[in-house]
Length: 219
Image (cartoon, rainbow, N blue to C red):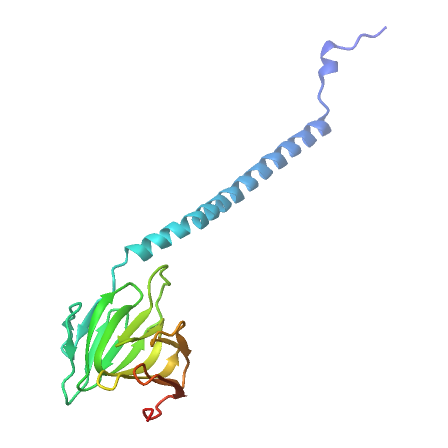
């Protein structure tokens, strides 16, 4: 009887060893690949989660608009009345690029400043408003607002002319770009006026007429 050496039972099959090594290598490669893709995904999720907070910080930490008056760009002062000379217009330039030009003889003041607009009051005369589109829509911020006696014109952006005559209690609105919401005379809802359109109205005379932009005053 032939007795095999005791170490023979523990001999390793070379093919089996090779297969096991390849399996281990594939497992390590898969783990490395999964780890390589896991971090970009986690980073992307974190960025998406933090984006609203970063945007809120940028928006709400930005200062209100500022403005200058006249050709010399003197710093504007809130609630100060500005009067255009009888022989030339007076420009009001805002820090977002918006421009309000008071026609000769017109009188107005900036009542309030926001981050996406301002509130102006026209005491008398005509103003041309060219409002820039805001770079960021700020929640809760009011758009550009122009008060004219009992009337109010509001627009997020666009170009329009408004005239207020306190003696006849008449307002005129002409829109060239964008849309303007005009309210007043105890109307329940403001009326939206689009490009090429206008309104001639008087609360005292109980008149409210839609016209083409540039139409003469209502008789």
